[in-house]
Length: 382
Image: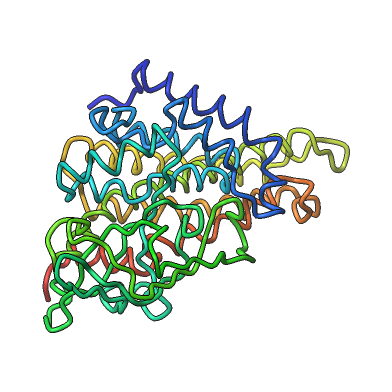
């Protein structure tokens, strides 16, 4: 077991860090304030192969792995969570296509994410189906050679800017088992009956697109079905083994960015005639923050490494997501505290990081859901 990053990994880290510092830092506050989609930054990230690193070259991607994806996401989130979130979500759902899509689907839908202006997303959450994914009621009925989709989704990334989305649909309502009722279907957003309303007023991640979706007799060809009809819930759980590792990487990046801000501030800010970083109470806080981040980072790296080995570990990924995101919330809270009253104003980036942190414990499985997953894996069926 080697804990040292290779030269290639360090080069990828450096490229991601330099890109984020050069493209995010000076505009992040403006994008957040105006809830603006960072179209030009997305374009530049495509050109530099800094999105969808896990997608193989034969499907238009950079051809790296999930570990490299985690490294890039960590660097992006250190600089600005909002823009970083949007760059991550450009290919959100591609893992599902790689895992369960046909060869024809992969060749059709994945290359445009890199060669053109395609943006994808994965529509799962509904007004009455959040953590209880199996209660999703948006339905797709097969009529001849087409699925007809009706229903609604909420809090969906890229709902208004996406060119196509994966939709988690109820296709087999007669089946009693929750694992056999749903399917995943590709829907182009320019189809008749598709409507997306932007959702404004998010506490954080305001540069990323979020929408409420409505499907009114949206017709798509049956070849847009991903995987096996009725197998959508199982496919979705496999997808979460990947997506939760990324969210965990988000948490590490945000926490590290917050710590870096805190360190800079306590070195420069003086009280009682000396830098506040010289006080033992401050030093203890910094030590605890750094320790938690390093533990979280190692858990995230291992979970991503296992994905590249073809050995996804549901328990470890849930642990990584649970712990790294909890650490992000704790660390950014302490970092703002160390900024004192200054941290409460948006002149300081720590305020934006503080607002962004909480959602990490909510999306892609709440912290309560992650605990359930971990406990079930450890205890087995009781």
